[in-house]
Length: 165
Image (cartoon, rainbow, N blue to C red):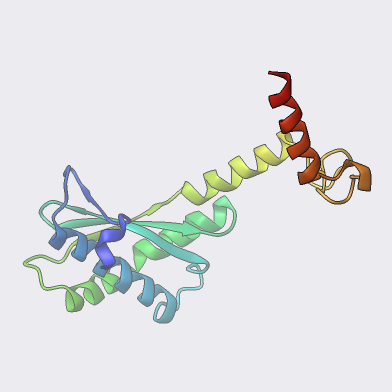
């Protein structure tokens, strides 16, 4: 089920109804497809709609987007999306059957950016893979034939322990 994935949220509510989750998912799908296939604004590119929050009265929806690129590109893209909000609201109105068409506002989702920053910091703090001394020992590589596990010797050692008791 599309809305059960936990990506859509209801602003101001603690437990969104399934119907509200479906509305949020429908808005996400409509806006994503329209951005991908219908918007011709050159400012709008490399955009992913991450999730949508709808208000309890369904009169407004916050569309969270992730934009690849620098801060300037992200801001330009947000302005382009906000300028296209009316067109996108028309698309949403055709898809969902509610008393009011939600007013769309676009917000930059920093989740992906934060993940990339955490990965960068971790890679600086932790030694890079492939450096000498980091390789795990291969079980077969560093053992001599004499060091290999011998089940018969282990059984004899257990038997000798029993005799000592």
